[in-house]
Length: 340
Image (tube, rainbow, N blue to C red):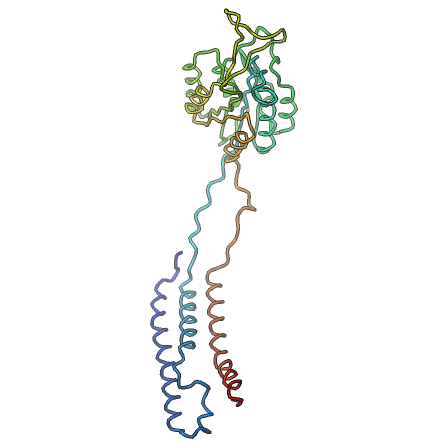
């Protein structure tokens, strides 16, 4: 709270003192009149309760003076400067479509859950420019940068774990990050926030250090790298169309959610890691990415002017002070049966 004319506050104690003197002088005159009149019939000419010091009247007048003095000083609320509008969001969603994404430790499967993630992101971020990349052993741009979320949802429906050929069934996270960052640059927007969202179980075939290094390089180029994990720590058997994949000993190969790698990648890329196998995790991811949207004008609310509120307070106190005599006389008449 600030005051435009703070020097006027010095008038408040002066006004209060003058009002107190005026009320005291009036009360003293009424007492003198009562003593001079003497006769009860003549004393009835005085107001009811004239011999009691009018503390209520003095309080009303002091409140009125204080409110008017403060209003004259023009108090203003200190309104913080609104934050600058959030940068527009350019989002590259890179979805893992390797064989491990076909496992069912995320309902209904990892890749089916990835489709839901892409669809809900496009719905929750209608103002974002989105592109869709798929990758296994090598990344491909499925949808170039577009402002139409319907296009993204249409192509997202086609995502499945056998989308690429058998000869292209690895998981190259490093190449996916680099490719998604380069795809964002094909349709740049001035001042846009550029984000790569890697949707994967994290089962990379390339060296983890190289994956982290690629995320760090993207961040140095102004691209945030976020990761969304699918799967479970206990893992699930890796299968193809002909049956489970077996290792050299004949045991089924398990594929697990590699949270440590995905978290390290997000940390190096200046983003955040979220496990999105359930709806709570997906809501958390959406809330974070929605921070890039500008604040809607409807979320701003005007507040009443402080000076108007003070003026209303002063008017109320003045009306109350004016009603004191009438209320006192009415109570006296009701008690004694005499009209004043």
